[in-house]
Image (cartoon, rainbow, N blue to C red; front, side, top):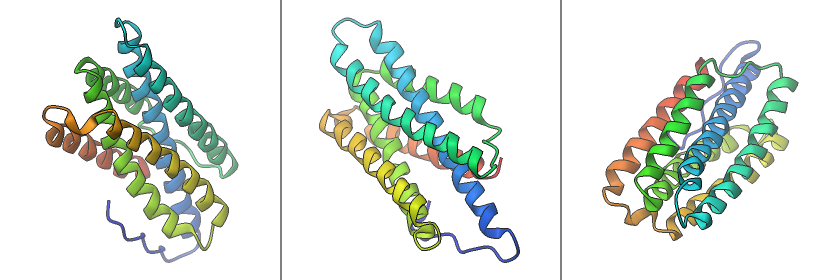
Length: 187
């Protein structure tokens, strides 16, 4: 996604329509993130000597669950339906999480680094777009973005960039995230 904010649409209700897209896609992203961490934890919970990473993942999943709950409330308050893709995003998130965890700790961290990089860019563009008209929402998105950045930084510190094939793995994950963003805004 580009760093440029999306220009407002002309016509009555355009601002509300754009808000709906923002809330729908952010809800979908947090839903996917929760399930990525659940998939990773499902693998590491059964593995010997993986309590440390399982704990890290549980903590990050907890942050994502808080974000998801906030978006649940925002969807209800603004009468915005969630994405119709939610069942697919749950399954895809869990599969991505479990798949990267099966490749090892560094690959699981590589997944986090890749996802959170896209999410940080996405939140930054939204924050710039709505800062003037919706400062409270922009502030909340800023808090969420900062937590996503801390997840990314922790993943990098844990060796995400040392994953064999990192550029390819991260590139595929980032492309998938960007596609899910575009789809979830509309569907």
